[in-house]
Image 1 (cartoon, rainbow, N blue to C red):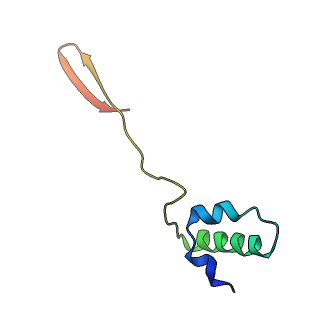
Image 2 (cartoon, rainbow, N blue to C red; image 1 turned 90 degrees about the horizontal axis):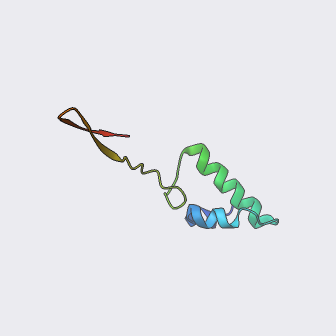
Length: 67
């Protein structure tokens, strides 16, 4: 087992996943291992969700809510 791919970020592994040699196979195996244990360092996906607040008037009452 080659441990050098454990130190790479998710973004680096994603860039190397399409290699058609032994390194590519090791990268794909590392990606699969990370998915199975639920590890992500956050370099690929930003999971923050923004909410937009809208303001509208009903009669004389101002209502502020998330969309």
